[in-house]
Length: 119
Image 1 (spheres, rainbow, N blue to C red):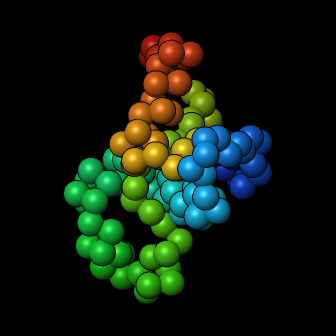
Image 2 (cartoon, helix red, strand yellow):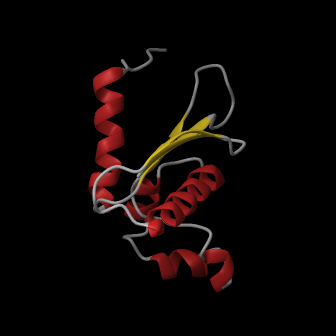
């Protein structure tokens, strides 16, 4: 499943692709999106920073189980920024593959379609 949404929450694109897409993927997308918006970085970065330990992550922020269930530190959520605009303007999320591949799909598309911005 792939979703592109604006930071305020408006979904501008969503597609379920592949035979293995499940309703659970929509929940994962929401949790990954929430993480990107709260911490302003990719979920893969958060995953690597915490060695994938969701429980240690939860404890650091003193989240209840209910609060912790709003966030995921599994790869597949990437912030979109625009030069000259403060903050994250959109989020791209992929769910349904392994988390490294979820993240890799987004990175590959960005690298193949957009040149890096030079300062």
